[in-house]
Length: 161
Length: 161
DNA sequence: GTCAATTAAATTGTGCACAATTTAATTGAC
DNA sequence: GTCAATTAAATTGTGCACAATTTAATTGAC
Image (cartoon, rainbow over all chains, first blue to last red; front, side, top):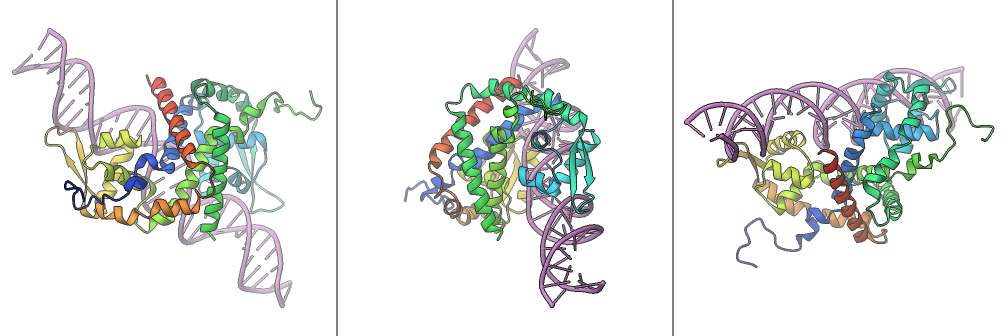
């Protein structure tokens, strides 16, 4: 009803459409800023951020299939296959068809892939030094994000059947 | 010291390298699952998720330059220019050099771009229906993420000079 | 007023993400 | 045992992200 409202300015409650009220934007922006913070540290290991996460998964459990790696990282073969090929090129891992079931491809870390673990050991502390000393309750946030993630997974599973 | 430890298994405290202990992974995975949840809703408007965020920004303040849009969304011209060109092709907005300063490009929503706002109005509620009824304190999480984002921005600014 | 420095977009090149499809192997109902 | 259905990767195609560079306009020290 305000006189200065224009034709397209629906001045009802559009606070729901405010960028800063979107949880999605906060998560999206935080994720990219996080990646950006890791970049210089990972550059020295000559790997990217998704490659780092892949290594974290493999250091915990070597010899996973592409499928199980995808389940762990929430990525599909469309993303993983080319990335794993690049990592194979770099000598970090080997891709081998499972002799038991030729549909499966087993990912195995090479010595170089394992050696990376020592070089990466200091990364979490370095990042904590840059950020976490300032957050009031990082553990709570991690826990909340995992709860959110579980909800989103559930919601997405419902949408896609 | 355990007898079954292998050569590359450094069995010191590698809990810091556990995937599930990484705040970065939680944010990264949550961000992608969030995008996935929006996709079917945005598909009906024939826009992508980053395009939706761009529209949210422009609905709040039309006529921004590429630079200021980038500052709002934390994106650079390398990402924005091609995306804005696609949105221009779709008739959602116009790109025009600022006559006052020919280096700047001003982004203006078209009528179609404004009309989208009405169609998008229901999206936040639809998503809330799918997710937020289950989160215990979504406002706290939003606030925490903004705090984290601010910290990350600060840390990144320090790294890049 | 001139020109080096700065600023804003655009461009180039690489690496994800992911939907949709294809290829190839395996399973299981009959 | 056969073959339709299922499963696992790979492939195809589109759209971001972003570092690094280029292009073009503007600013400001002199």
